[in-house]
Length: 165
Image (cartoon, helix red, strand yellow):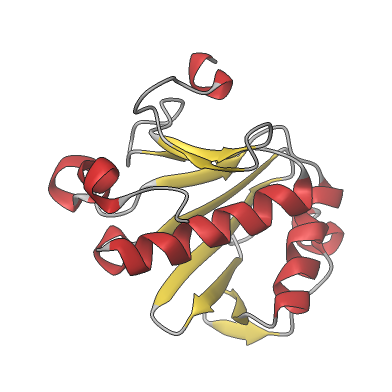
């Protein structure tokens, strides 16, 4: 059964209402958590591409990426959990894993299931919530992986504990 039903959450995937690039994040992260995500990408066989500016490079260890000088260009890791869904991880800080998705790629139940599965894989692997905020609405998640529930939930019905933060 699907974690979320499209009819219940489609408003959160409307680019006109939410912005086309919502912020997806794992708060209270560490360098070890970043490395665990890199390891998960490899273990799952998800296609990925690491780059620093225009240079495409092999995926380094998280510690190396996150110890770059503050004025260095922010590297990113593009991950395709499926051929037509892209997540772009940005290595801004060690204490929060953050990535973008394009809501225009996440329309309908099938794509929602892919996205929910991606959040669930990351959340279960880390044992931490994975939250999606509207573009520019940092700190106001509309859905996310709830560790206690073991699935992706939205604020429809009873709000999960992480919505009250």
